[in-house]
Structure formats: structure tokens, C-alpha cells
Length: 125
Image (cartoon, rainbow, N blue to C red; front, side):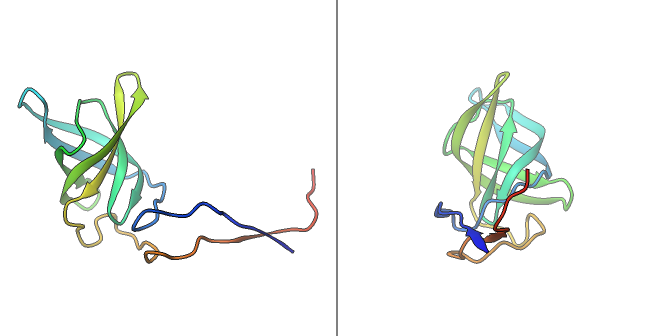
């Protein structure tokens, strides 16, 4: 039986997992006006997440993210930005101090080996 191996090395402190959690993001824009946006995570890790925002933010900016399911609030820092289309931005954020169980899930330990899948010897069409 052959083994499918994922060679990409995980550089994050905890693995990123695709989870669609409802979020409320609070912050202050460049004009010093407060904003509050309802959004959803695209992926999460034990140290942050990825979401889409339709407000302008900058790398290093502080945001407050609320997990709408658990009502838990966390102070976060924007670590990267990518264009998301239609005037939206894909925002990667990290927790300033990782809260206990913010996502209500357990992540693999840092440095854990990636999963391996067994494939059948013959493929069927």
C-alpha cells in the first residue's frame, strides 16, 4: 500500500484549520472612527485566524475579535493583508495573548508531523 505524504512543512506555531466561525470585529479606522463588522473566519489556528473585512485596516493594527458562538473576546494584531475582491480584504490576525480555548477546539502540538493517508495500490476510474 502506498502512502500519500504532504511534504510542506508547517511553519505556524499551531496548524491552520478551515473553520467558519461567526465573528464580530471591532477596531478604529484611519480616520479615527470606531467600526464594528460582522464576519466569518476562513481558517483558524491556536494563535489567530484568517477572515475577510470590508473596512480598511493596516498591518500591526490592533483589533478586538469576538467569537459570536462563545461570546469570548480577544485582542488581536493584524499580521498580513491580501486583496479579496469586491473592495474586501483577507486579513490574517494573531492573538496578542492567546485566550484559553477561543475557538472551542484542540489543535495539534507544535512540531507535530502532518497526517498521512494510505492510498489503494490501484486506482479506479
